[in-house]
Length: 154
Image (cartoon, rainbow, N blue to C red):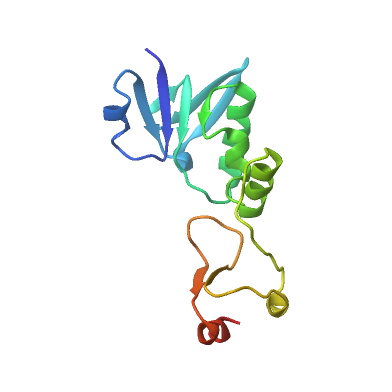
């Protein structure tokens, strides 16, 4: 039976992946070993040599242990959803937009300024959304419906 490792995931994956041996581990509690091209992941609950990995950490900037784990997943060739390569850049909105655009996929038109003093140089019809920062997850988004709200944000 194939072994699927869930990293930081919800507790219901065994029910969904009933045809697999499902193990769950928290990234912050793990040690990662790459030996002779084979990947092993250990924590206080034991060691697993996964056949596939479901990464449920989220669209955040990877910490040092997360980056190491993603690099080892990539080096081992074990299938990971999303791919380790994607997860390493996926937290950064502009990197992901560039990757999507490079693949020839459509993206919504957008404007970017790196300093708020340049917001006045972008004329956009109301309503529009302002996103502060470069991270996913809905952080830093404001719907600007009219000039009055725009003045409060600017």
